[in-house]
Image (cartoon, rainbow, N blue to C red; front, side, top):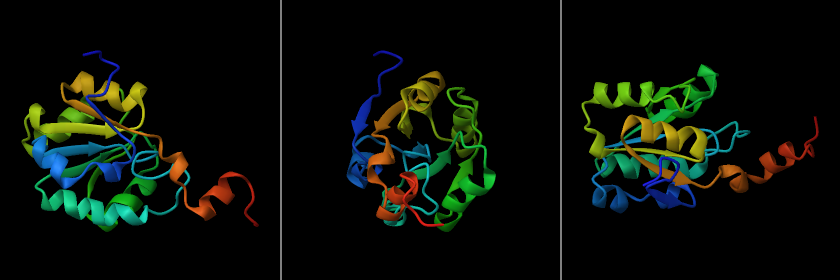
Length: 157
């Protein structure tokens, strides 16, 4: 398989169900944040994120956010409510943080997946780390109405 090709593709993170995680024997799901779990401009997590995280954890999958965002505060603001571990400024496609997290949690590569929206960062980092790569579509299309107005410059200041 090509280094630039994801092992699986999904429209949204919500399409990665507990059943899929169990079938694929995923014990550790490393997730990109911006444009994967939320839009880049979003100031708060998507409503679906909390229930999705709980369902994945109930299925026996640990979730860790691995973000290239340089703002520790932004990444922690999304992860803290769900008690998720996170890495900010991960410098993907470098795979060092993916490997460190996997090793620290004691999970073998065959049970680990990196999920993200970009082949140039998330997919390559997964391939370099020797783990599976799952691609989701860019989250921009799923902005909340108020965020769409903000992005288009329609919000009143």
